[in-house]
Image 1 (tube, rainbow, N blue to C red):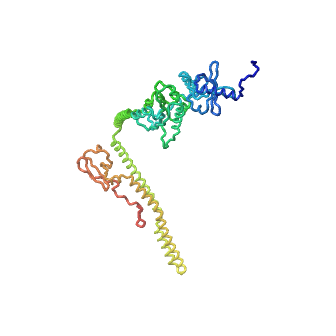
Image 2 (image 1 turned 90 degrees about the vertical axis):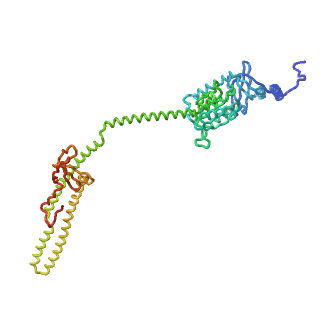
Image 3 (image 1 turned 120 degrees about the vertical axis):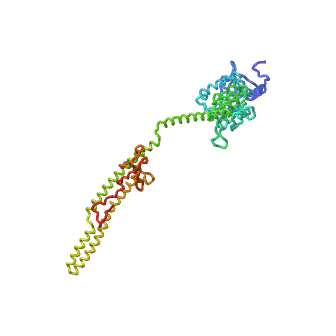
Length: 499
């Protein structure tokens, strides 16, 4: 048959042929696993992810819908060898076929480690692992926040160790620690604890512990996710990571403030041992008491040494008492002289003033003589008026004279009181006495009195004689204070003495 003759071949439209191919491919490859190197990765604004898997001579286009992208435990990265699970389908608009990815994972441990190392370097370049970002762990936190599974052995081990060492208030934020949702829940728990306000209904933790038991690298992969690492690095609350066993290392360990090899070790890092703390406090108390006793003894020795170099207080008082007596005696003499001088000045002033009564009497005599020589009635009346005026003038003169003498009298009274306040007489009123020798000089020491010497003892109300050592008494010599004061010259019976 000629090739140009159509023959009996069926005729398909483009859509029919495309649909038949689509049904054939989807029926034959409904569920496949494909291994290859990830090529270009693009995520559209709608959230869908487009990528390619390639080998040396073949390329397979892949698409991952938005709902699946959000559930991926391992996000595909260019250059990484991964295994994708999904279904094969066609895209008639471009006459191509593609793999719809439902799950993707690194191809073996080596691929995971390569991805882990690449992610670690990228995050370290941002400074998330710098030592300057590390915060000190509080010595004795009041509230501890724990992010872990509520049903595993990890939380029981942590609580048991806390009770043994130092019981604290614990807040548990339950999360899943494995699987696609683990990373998001752990990051949300760390940020949730940090978002608690100070002084709120739920106390804000002073320390966080993110813990999980041991497992394979795939089991622990949630703690290598970028969202968890960033949440740990941003935490304002100090954070201890305790993921897996001592040989297990995850990226959260680099971002945390301190890494614990096991969850039990994290509890030991969080709180001290109460018994050891009490022992250290008791030891410090004993050392403080001993140091205080030594310091007190040293200070006592210094005080005793200083006391030996100081004179006895009674000697200091005796010396100052003698100085006071000497100054008081000097002041008494000076005040007596000053008072005597003021009194003389007042007497001189009084002598220079005419006697008002004598002047009035003389004027009255002259007036009487003048009145006797006059006979005229009008003159006598006028003289009577003049006499009344003279009487009033005399009384005014008396008052003026007395007022002028009041100020000297008040000044003399004040000086007398001042003299009395400085006089030793006041001391005698309190029961003391002054002992003088025969010449009237005061005796201030017993050594100054020879046996048999005649003494004069002055009390507040007078003087008496005495003999030292029982020898015969000599009559006391009257002192200047006991002799009567002489009457000031010029005093008359009319005006009287001002003193």
